[in-house]
Amino acid sequence: MAKYLHDDVLDALLLTVADYADRLTVCSSQPTTFVEATSGSGSGGYMLAYVGLTPSGGGPDYTLSDSASGRQCQVTSQAQFSVVYSGTATHVALVDLSAQKLLAVTTCTSQALTATGLVTTPAWNMVVNDPT
Image (cartoon, rainbow, N blue to C red; front, top):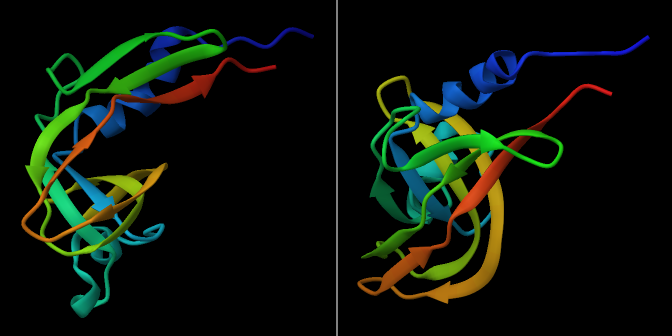
């Protein structure tokens, strides 16, 4: 028996992130909680740098489109934002500040960051596959 989900169903999951994630954080380890994603190492977290995002499914920081296997939401590149704490970046997280929720996490190329320096994150995709 074939399986099917309309693109709107897949987009609903992606839009939950795109409509609410208003901050991107660069982290030294994989955060599993909001506090870990938004606090520095001295406060029980992994955050090294952060930048504000415009939450909106059609906004400048997120783009929904087809992917080879379903639907995707591209998070746009964030250029030259300030590093707050020194450490080695290994993950990028998207959080909803007002609801204090960690919404998404991905890995990044490991890179040493120095406080007061600048960091750029490349564009990356969150993909939801069609059912099989």
